Image (tube, rainbow, N blue to C red; front, side, top):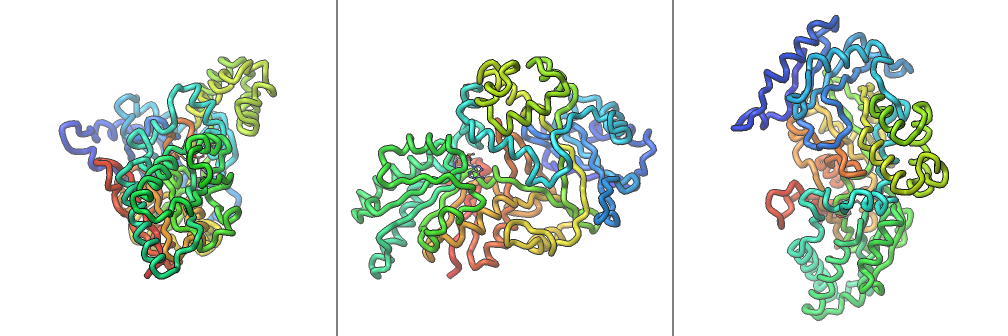
Length: 494
Ligand SMILES: C[S@@+](CC[C@H](N)C(=O)[O-])C[C@H]1O[C@@H](n2cnc3c(N)ncnc32)[C@H](O)[C@@H]1O
């Protein structure tokens, strides 16, 4: 049996975790079972997100490489991964949890789960429908909770609002523009794009400071500025437009998917001096891949609601248990406002529909299984990005599991062609910068209110950017102490 304990930092210090107390009931319960212990992995994380998709103990079948072309979803004999959340161990009767989980594995009904989907790739799971629902109906959610989404971000507000950070960025742009202007090479129109604008607070900060610094600088760059706010949520775009109303003459807004910016913005190819992104890459669809015992797997997922939670929610809203999934389907396709028209007997007003949404989301969990990959060369990370790019990361670090950050990579590679040769992409986010972090930390997914968060695979993004002729650098966000936020800068290589 292989035991992997990732949060090693938690094992020392005055509040050290009692690892043996956590593990011994688990190992005892595993030994009671008839499992082939030699084919078992016991992996321990510290899931720091209070709201997440995991149970205290999950079981993940590891399918046989020999079966990869077959449609069999059977585990390879007893090859299993048992995943433990050490943060919640102290509060649970672990031996009993293990027995229940193993009983559920053998007797599927014992799993007590209401599934929302069939097995799917991580990027196409229905959890992403919940994620986009949140941004489309952010106002409904914020009204129900009485708290703004920014409060859930690391630090309680977006670092893109940090004035010192914004000044540094703008001054560096002025230096580039002054230089181009002195060679008569500065275009008349100065384009800046922001992807994923949220409530527009950071756009406002950026535009206010730009206008102020430009007045001091005396170059009339503000007069030539076009700031393009982009988001897939009409709701947040409307909020953002209101927020930057005093800059209206310099701002346009585009409803577009951040993973395919060229579809709407292709006319700006090679013209954009700054693509500005914060806290968006960590919110784009991703799946996990893993290297286990010399084989490469993708982690397939299946969203479910535990039966006890499903029964509680159904009862509270007067829904027959077998109609619950149908009501969730309607919520996801129509949104909470139209749900009131469609299912008025359960949801007399938007507040009740919002309460239903929040309770379901709170209960949604992910079951996982490892499915062998047929070959990295046959895997597409994002349109035009071959899975071979993953090879250096997967083959040099032993058994490892990581996010592919498919959505972030799609966005990144579809943004690079927009950049002016002297332009840059700047992105503040939670980036993994060293593959070793995958061996020591839990990097998602977690739930931030109604949205999903996953750390972004920085080394992979860097590798892909370099192959496309860009320098991609990471630096800890310089203007707030103790933050996990890292700033990515990508520029055409000199
Ligand atoms: C966490 S907020 C960040 C907002 C802002 N940049 C900040 O730092 O506060 C994420 C934003 O990305 C947007 N977003 C998420 N997925 C998107 C996608 N696929 N296409 C476009 N926008 C997306 C959301 O609508 C939301 O406005």
